[in-house]
Length: 177
Image (cartoon, rainbow, N blue to C red; front, side):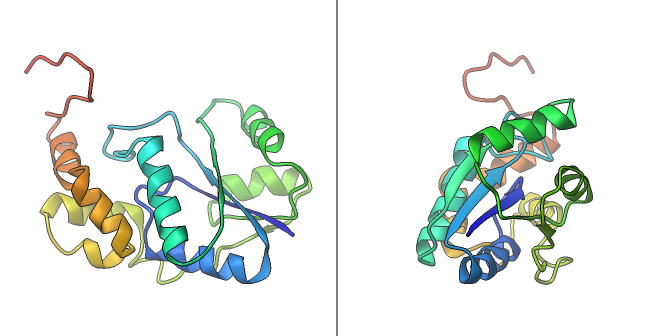
């Protein structure tokens, strides 16, 4: 059976991993839809789509879970967003998401939607983890080890801090300070 797991994964954390493991127990085909693929280098979306794909793949591989990644841009029209996913993922059996907007769109289109069974949602929450990164300590325990190493490698902590201070220049940009 085919499951779709939708999120932004900014960053991919242990709550996401818990959900992914749970999904993998019951579904043999898992498509991880990474939303806001066209958003990066902002305080809410600090990581690029390539970086998030890498995080999801590393964590899944670390736990022996096979996934297919589907990046999806944010668009203004809900129907266009849904159709884009349906073009990339055929014959969906179930969609996993805790996001009310995502749930409404898929349920309205007649799809079965389930909560991910969020694991300690207040602890494993992207905004909270990004805030810990700004402080420069304690965030590593909330993400899988491979993700923590990768974020360190790409200097994700520093990026988020600089984004918050509005001093960050995306690679390839000409910034004036």
